[in-house]
Image (tube, rainbow, N blue to C red; front, side):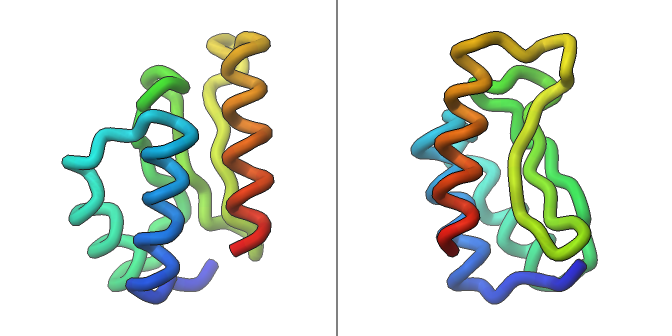
Length: 88
């Protein structure tokens, strides 16, 4: 796990807002935590429900939700967000 640059952390949060309906009000805390601490997971909720999380773990950045909360529409959101995150 590596901390993110401020630019990359903001780019990640843009994707979380655009694809997963993460609240814009969480951006500053996300950027601060991802750039200054080794935080492997970040709960943002959004359209993925309470279990909507961003992961910076094992050399990958990705999102998911609790398996029991996954629906076909949430799976589409996860897949689209992860596709964009992989390109960063």
